[in-house]
Length: 460
Ligand SMILES: Cc1ncc(COP(=O)(O)O)c(C=O)c1O
Image (cartoon, rainbow, N blue to C red; front, side, top):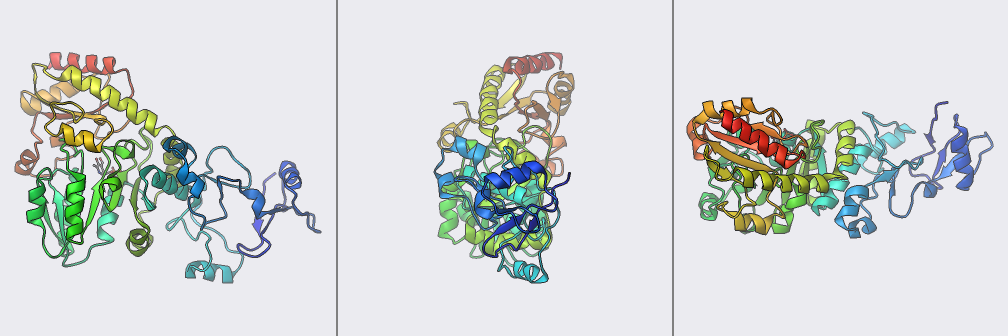
């Protein structure tokens, strides 16, 4: 029998919830045990207090933010339980609220919600209980005060920039960026009168020289995609703040498990949750994390009005994925270390880059900012594009794909895929040569991954 819950007013006192039109027996039983008041019409009501427990929040408390107790939990506990809203059913797993909208008990209530005088949800383009769980869990993970989720990583990057910039502003960004991020900074922003300068992100003086009186944002990724350049987060954050600008960091390659840029002074952190957070090739998603002021004054309204909202279904998958994120990322990193070690010195490779290896030119900086070297290894095959293609095509275990951070090891030829749109001379400046290949090391046995690579290198 379907259960229908009817609120008797979101903020009326006392707060009662009608469980009687019609309710299953087990719900009525639960209501009885909880000391609820049966009403004359035969309905069962739950006092709102019975729908919460000590550490998890009630889904009805829209305004109830992450509890102080949750903030004190150790990271492992936060990853599993952080941000959890339990409904009146007391479900173990986080609930999936696959709904586009919410109903109001009266026109007055609808008006109050739109005025911001009532804390309930309005429309899933603005907010949704399952999306809120994902945002809150990510906040705990990152140590960020506030966050808003987006449909993709690119939506997060674009929103994090456009929400705070306007005509006449200037942006300085590292040259070594994911291709679509380069498009946003180099091509999209200037269309709206926002100028940008690209610099060698490894060189702090280059950032300094590029600053102008109207510079509002510094943008970077570290390690960079795909060349694994490392940028000094503290130095660039300090520079931004001396110029009253903000530092926005795309932390996809490091993940919040290995590196939390806000600890080094970053103002805004963005993720493609499509990568390690999902980590199993299922969902697209993104998130922007920052302080309350940034989210309230810039981001929230931008997202509300422009609409790149995360689907509640994807938010649910991503929230559950955070439970195992640390275990997956650390194992991928251990596997990547083994693969990098196996490849180093191979006669057909002119270069193997892995920030966790002492021969990486910025190894010390990488280890000062990151817990481990990451899950991506980049190497250059002698013989250029043709040789790189032969190696990719000879692999039988590792898949050719442009994604990364997946449980399955994936190989990419950046010059012809993720960075294809960048002109060749620029690509070469970024170190993306025709023979360069990026491998995102997964959770298979690293010996199997290395053997597959060796066999492919021999065959090529
Ligand atoms: C560094 C970086 N930022 C952003 C993105 C964009 O993420 P999404 O594909 O979820 O839009 C990617 C995707 O590959 C990436 O590698």
